[in-house]
Length: 417
Image (cartoon, rainbow, N blue to C red; front, side):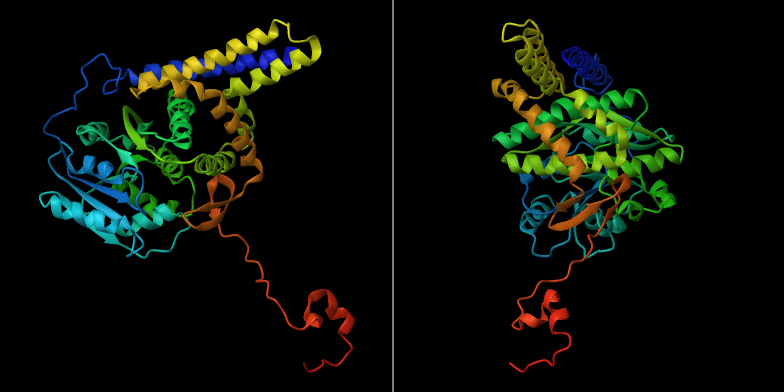
């Protein structure tokens, strides 16, 4: 058993090292934070107009500062469409204030009532998408914060007619609570490593925080409606565009996903939902995901060594070294991303890894999710469906009307009460 765990630990550490190496190489591409060239947004005469769609639901962490970065983009011609579903959304006064304070910016607010899909984000976007006037459409979540050259950099990739979708590396930022630090640390370690590693082998793991596409390409596929019933709408869009012959580009220029005050329960719920989604997409490969978590394997190895040979066994030192290496690689990835690194971020690595074992296991038994108040069942390929309706339990005055007693009183004449 110890020998088997040692082999698994070696495989796991190798995989994490490969993630780190792929992140390092990806972020050194032109435009990335570690590129050899000075980080300047590409300029030129080609700057076609862009419609930016922002789905808004409530007052998210840092919403005002997030949206201000989009108002101040260094780009000649773009419109911003804020998409809402609730006319009493608490974010609506903030959006109107932005619209008033920046009259030169082309800002629209669309309060729609589309209910044709099960994915609440896509249902929110579709009315704004129908209102958009430009062929280039950028979908960007409300919790995203960008730099002034963001739009120029994104558009520079889609100038190639063979590119159908441009996404970005996502960096967790602004954490002030334990849950937010866990969430941001996961984005800045496993997620960025997986995205860059799989991109190198030709698998596009698009994260829908930032997606630039051509409207006419989407219309050929059926518009946003084709993914309105998928939990992983970003993955589904990328898969359809690749199937149609287009390339998907993961830009090395990070965008910030802001999470300031999330709690641990929110972290667990979010990534339980993510794992339920990944399991339906990955299939049997999902079983191998713990190999990206050396901490859990190292602890199992140390426990087995102590049980079999006592606390003086040198295998325990090997397990400890593996945990230390994982902490160092995660910290190194965060440095590569340009995210501020604090001592607590490094020390939280083992706790985060143990919690990720739990949410990985939860991905097997959790098929029902709750997303923005909707209870949904995640099927194959992250296809969503509504759970079967259950009969409403009512408190009945006549006990003879209860199902278990009907047979007993079936032959008797009902009694007036």
